[in-house]
Length: 167
Image (cartoon, rainbow, N blue to C red; front, side, top):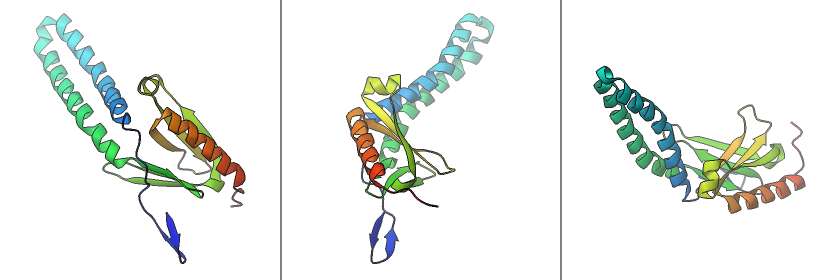
């Protein structure tokens, strides 16, 4: 958000997730697809009379899972953006339904870092900024873990110096 002569103009946040986030998102897609494919494949191997009825959907789900893992993460990478200014945290997500979230510094209550096992494997982290908003926390996913640590430190410093919102 830029201001000038009494006007406020929304602009896309400047920062992209770490490039390694594409691999992380791909791994997540593959894991989600692998569970039903594995169940169908095992059942197809064990239940001979229904083998074709089980292995065909397993193959279709495997192909769709692979296609999803190849394409969607690249699209997500192009769509996800974030930025922290002295006034607010800006996050844009979504492919079909774009969501722009702005969390004013004066409304931030907590700042957390999450690093699940898969994120740790890819050297990534997610920063969660909790506000008083009914919409919930603002999440910045796919950050390099060092970038995330620096961001949390910066947000903590800025929010401590920002007076709370009286509304």
